[in-house]
Length: 400
Image (cartoon, rainbow, N blue to C red; front, side, top):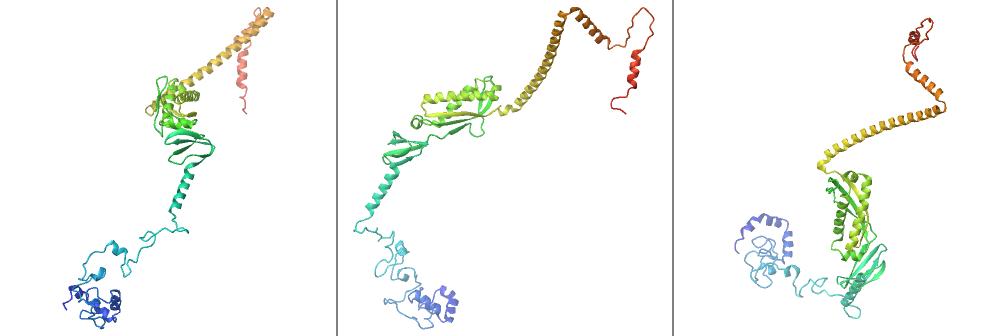
């Protein structure tokens, strides 16, 4: 026998360990390999085995011992009498024996068969009929809600409109049903997000304006078939109507509440007229202006102008107040004079004298002169000086 390869020289300690354990691992290995060493030698050590089991046993086929290592995972153990080849799909999924392939026959295998009906017929036609009935039920019966409407198309062409309730049509793909909620109030915001929408006013100013269009479907047939893109058309019509309405008003009126209401009503009327002319099937529910601001680039200047306008308005208010006060005083004086004149007409002499006395009293009452009658010697009494001394001697109000 030829000398063992270098591999066995390196594996000698493992073999010695197996011998010391009483050949237990040898027996297990020989049992798994059909009592033949996978490397072309009988079990045991390289000299023929130490326990005498199968030391020089001849292969069952009467062939000589193979020369060189044998691969236990290939057919025939990888001996030289059979051509060595790699494992194929059949080797992986099949185990060949005397009775042919042992695997297969399960669901999806080569011997798989559908179960048969009690009469011996196939279930396949029954399954096809069930699927066809289910398809007819799903595509031919339609439930339309009270707030909805549906249109039926036959091979893509309009056929009829379905009313709310249970309806029946031909199955798809012969007829198709498109259901829409015609009572839902939809909205379109212009512009989208935080983008600017600059519109020119009647006094050649720009205003950043955003608004909301509320609408619903009036005629589903026209909505689906008259316009290529009804929602985009609605946006374009709304923008055109808004620009035309804002151009009719000045900036101050556009920024005020009353001006907004007028613009919203004008946009609503213009939009509905245009959409009806297009036969769009859309009814406008309302227009709501959400923002009217100056452009971002001129916000500071606009604030300065607004502040100046507010100051001017405040000054005008003060002037109007003073005007009203003077007018009221003048009107009061005129009314008093009219009353005096009425008395004067009744007694002219008495009225003249009373007016003279009242006038002289008002004029001379503020002087420090004393008037006495002539014709005799009258001692002078310093009445004004006496009055002033009395005023100085009197304690102030609230004093001790």
